[in-house]
Length: 255
Image (tube, rainbow, N blue to C red; front, side):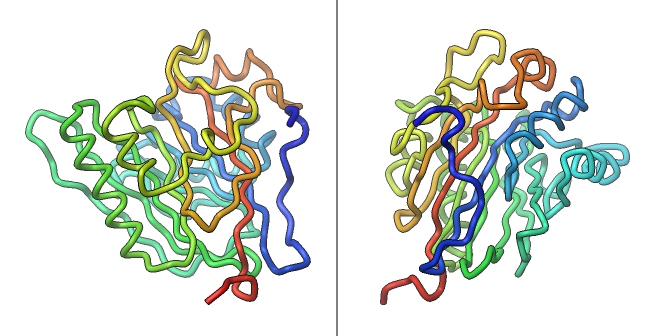
């Protein structure tokens, strides 16, 4: 699969839907916001899992501005989830949302989850956006909390995405990958490593999906038309992860 072969969003004849999902750590919009928005627009996502969204003064205004520049709308999250934020296109219909604050470890940064249940065409889908701890024991526990929250959404199919702060051989990453599909490992496309953007050495950002979701391609969209290395370096201190997924629709589910 070449860089321009990643499937676009569409509804299939069998009622399933193809969606594009983007995960992106935006470093509180401290870098070049216009470059960031250009990267997001070029990916043409249906859902964006944002990490390190603005959390302080006028954070809602900053989130709305990023959404507008990216030709998306705010779904949920931000300061109310301690950083994770969900954006979506108008193709997405929102059923319900909930922002969850995770237990605070004294001396460490507060973490949270941005969650939603949405419909895209005939498909019903759970979403959990996360940004896990820098400390390994807390990170492992938070991975379990993300899985618990995913189960509580009670949807036939779901996606967890975010900055895991762990590499694929780490305990937190493996905890997620044991229950879910690591989309890059299933069908790699584009680049693999996500940090730092100038000369990436680690894959610490990922998209995971439940077993019934078909992974059509997943990776860093470096070289995708409309995305330049200049914008990727200027936008933030992580590279984005873009996935194309086929989600069964209600009529396509088997009992």
